[in-house]
Length: 70
Image (cartoon, rainbow, N blue to C red; front, side, top):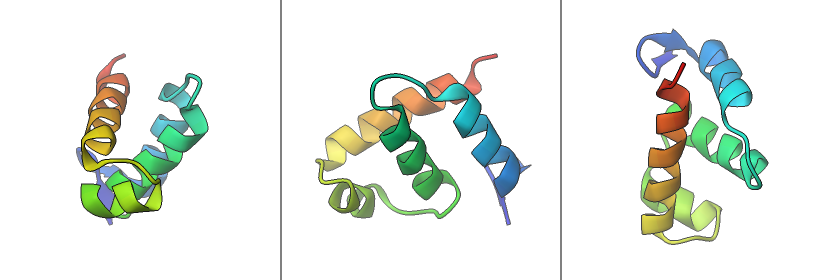
């Protein structure tokens, strides 16, 4: 299965591991793997990570910005 712009799941995992850092890096990396690779909805992610849907969307947006930068 391909995810995130035609990259394989392995390539997406590697990109996430390389690019997503910060004080909540581990949580955010796991959240993005669940979103991009597993295709989990924002609502389900919010439940799984015990946060609001709005927070989940904001984190995903910021992480996607990190993944798209060179």
